[in-house]
Length: 130
Length: 217
Image (tube, rainbow over all chains, first blue to last red; front, side, top):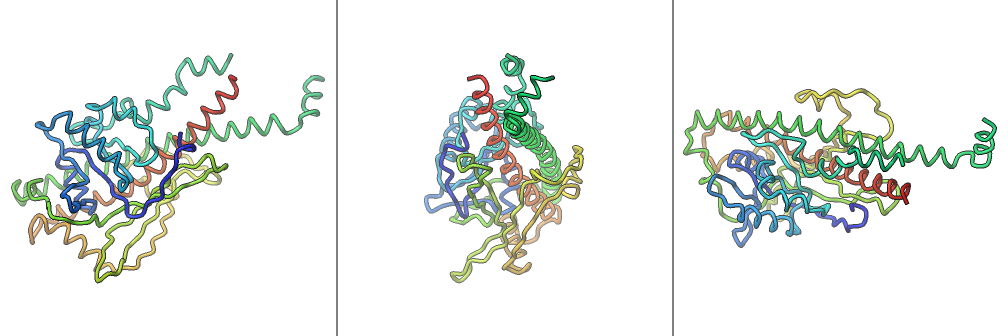
């Protein structure tokens, strides 16, 4: 997958965020916030009123933008759009699932680890032994 | 025994070399996986500290002063950005993206000045064979992180950029808010590492998949 897809070279690419208010605020303090001329931001603050559709739209928008290198998404939010996150397979932007205040990181739900887990499954071991 | 001797004499290094390559790929994948989990653990710890400091700042400054409502909606460029390059392991078909961070970039008077930190991957393929344990706060001390810092701006410029970022929340801010800013900056360093390790892990996984298909087919 990584070898066949074109890897674009980017300078000054952004980091996008789909996370709760405190996480987004913290990263904005670190200087990653960007607002363009159309007033489009590189972040989405998710709270109890944010709909799944809004999260999906933000994810699709950030992964389609060429000026974004990494998309940070809280793992509990990624679980709301799990199908979309798991079916994403481009090398850039990279999707990183991060913990949130109320939901610690769970390796069992990480989409990258789910993808590689099959290497350790009984089926793959059995097929290797045949 | 005699069959083995005949086999080894007719194909002295070929099969052995292939097995070594495959073992190398497996090791590379497992090491990337281990580094990925360790880095996520370190990131969790750094983020927890950042959230705690943010909560402390909110407590001392008031919750209305630290709120997403205050976040600037006016046009602004990110001061901290990423660079993406193509990294090649072995053959050109095994390329994967490599990420670097550029912190507190600023354009003043048409000139671009920046501090660039390139954090190389923790997992070196060759030399470092020390055992790793899953500590979080001591992670950066224990590992061979190569940081090439070519700072072409002064620390005062960095402080100005930091203050600009803090000024969204008022002129006088709590030291806890400054502490939170530093914690989240540290978290960004971990994120660059995680992005690179993730990329390397997926590349190693793809190679292993191809090997397995070759063996089965």
